[in-house]
Length: 497
Ligand SMILES: [Cu+2]
Image 1 (tube, helix red, strand yellow):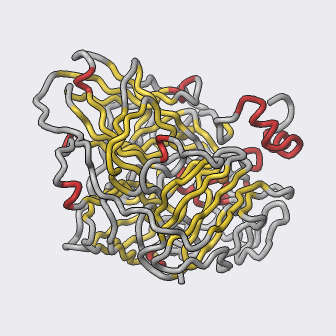
Image 2 (tube, rainbow, N blue to C red):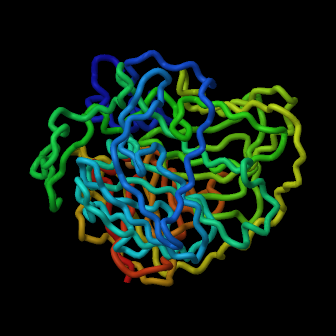
Image 3 (tube, helix red, strand yellow):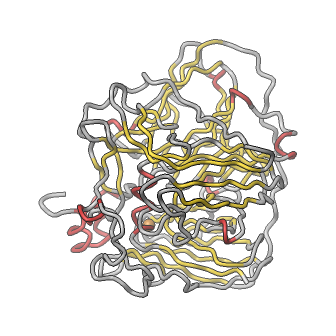
């Protein structure tokens, strides 16, 4: 990147030059760890605890700081749901309403968003709907009137989502239903939730994150970045150093919070629920020495029929529900999940070791489910995701303006939303689920199949999605799920009327 900082580079040359420079698939700036990286494939894959209700329909979880061992031989202070990273996995059922009482014993405010949830607006984790630090609490109400799917939850605090998720405030939530239960898919120990994210570490094992010095303090509501106040209710504060405004990528890949873990598997089918929980890093996942992913589900539930992939691109916030058949490998094989977009240590994700044969009565049926069909859109709207000349990330030219909806879709209707972009912007829509209709006017990618809530919009791409507004009226949002972009104002409200 020569002597220019990346920020200067972008500012001078813009994204076209960035793409031309061969960085077309890279969506952030690498932050290197200051400690010796651990050897890959030595730490066993952890499986997060499953949250237990305190009584039927009610969970209680406390956000607190805790010291855990992530890099062997060091400890890391995490901000965790339940003091763990990842937080506990919520194993939920369609139509079984639950309340999750979140108590905040951290020193920073939080707002919890159930990503992929069809959730009433008051429980959706609006960025200014804060739970106060030092003991504040909020009951989040999740009716879960939605199809079985792999969801996740994470902090959504205004301007500080990126550093707070980086420090640990994320976990998975699985919704199950009768339709899915009736399928002969792998389950139990052969169903693995895999939260993939990258991090960097300081020499002492603490998380490394490029916060500017002033954001070490709290209560800086009158701070702002690049002079940009533009209707921002509480002023805009950069939680990340400007050199990293493209997004922060770490050099250590964690799966379920462990660096490049290894999982012993039997020579049978496994269901892998893949989640990219990274702030900015995109992955193109492959199996080495070879193999296929049989995709059975997307962000928002089971596909109508399975789709085979040699590789899967996954941008921040996206999920793929896949089956891998390890009987295709000789016993004793090492099967490595790799990211072909990265070189160096971050190319590895995790490893499976095929330990022994075992009986397998599972199958991937040719018909998986009956997802909701397409309905005719009532209108088309455009949302342009772009870095402004002033150096903030905007939607339709505006940095985030809380309370100013860019759209008012009607409950029960569908709309085409045309998403255009100057860079990598994984666009996430709250509440509404959508089908990808087209990329640059052409057919979507095979990996775009199914109902989704997050779509990878790449530099100079125009992606058309058909979004259904079902569930609730009220205030929701769409935003870029590159968390640094999100914090630098690439969000907008919409109101379902
Ligand atoms: Cu973005």
